[in-house]
Image (cartoon, rainbow, N blue to C red; front, side):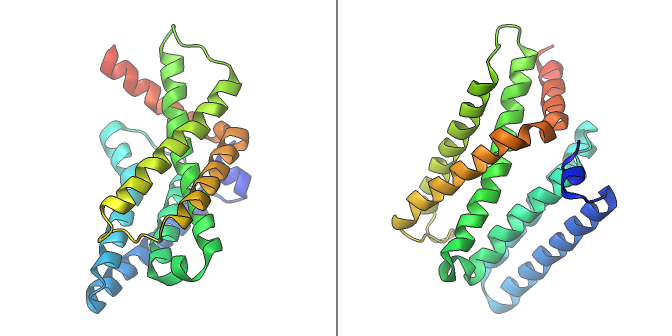
Length: 203
């Protein structure tokens, strides 16, 4: 089952949603440039670049990512970019949503890479419970790196203070748990891609 099947969307609908979200990012880039809000323009440009990574993988490696996953990545980056306008500052719940959604992306990539390494190596064989723990730990570690970057680049990334950090970690963990419990089945294609790259790189 693909992510689109779970959401009740066809591949064409998922692609249309992705294109619409990319258009939103283009509008935000234009808005940032016209109004002099260069932080918004930069954030939107980086987010737009992320949405084109699946296309780059298809062009360079022949891997066609599930359109549902591509759409989910686009949703995550658009939520973050729109939040940087004013929603983060105005609504705590919006920050919680974006951290949960973003954490599912990080969790998915971390799980897929770990599972591919496990399948690639005869020396690695872990129980499913450990995989679930790994997902949560991986996401929390990535969250630490992100918080450090927020403080290191405070002029480019909006920082909302230390009171926000604990909440961020809680909802990062929520996103990780969602993937650990329900999401790994939708990542088989990504696992396969990482495994093929390991074979190509390591023989």
